[in-house]
Image (cartoon, rainbow, N blue to C red; front, side, top):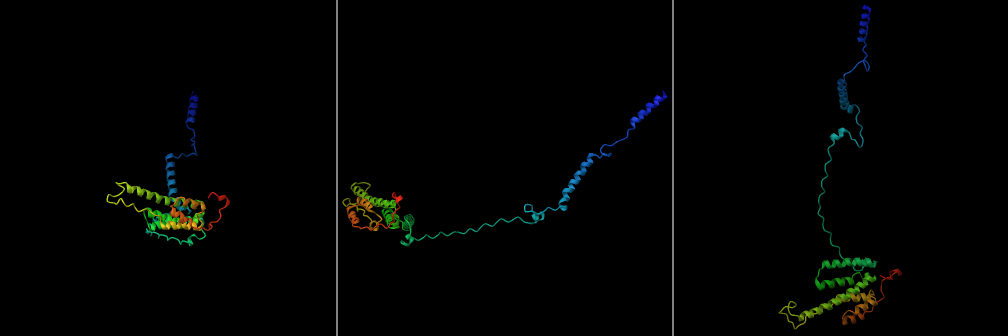
Length: 255
């Protein structure tokens, strides 16, 4: 019995005296100590790495010293405001040199600019303004009338001018016979109002176009059929020369 008890006691002692075998290399380091050391090492790397490995300068990344030392560029000073002087009005071009070698369209543009400038320089009103405008149109840049459209427009403007004078005179005669707001009570109703007459400058410009050949036979017949008798006879005495305009191409018969 004693032997059995001794054997059991030895077995119990053998179970309790197991050799201690450490996992992971035999020595176990606390986790808190490892975490703290990692934080310290990371801080040292961040703090001392720029000094050990200086940053290379590139176009996209300038040096830190230059970024601290270079001041911010100053805002550009506003440009001084200089009062611009109005350009002087261009003088009308010479009557002959301005149209030398110009075509019908170019002559029309130059003539329109000249007439507009004349009207601005010497403003007029009413009938006088209409006559000054028509006279400039018929006498300035006559090369424009080489185109059929311009010649037809000139013919229509001439007819409208004479018709307008005729209708105005007729209206004045009718108004003179009607009492009331048409005439002042103190006006002498026995005397007819002075009729309007065509401007001599306009008549001379018309004769100039006929004499130069810019208005052909058809245009002259239309004008003669719509002007007073004395002007019809006056224009009929004008002998025109051959048109100075170049012959139009075959495909421009409608112009």
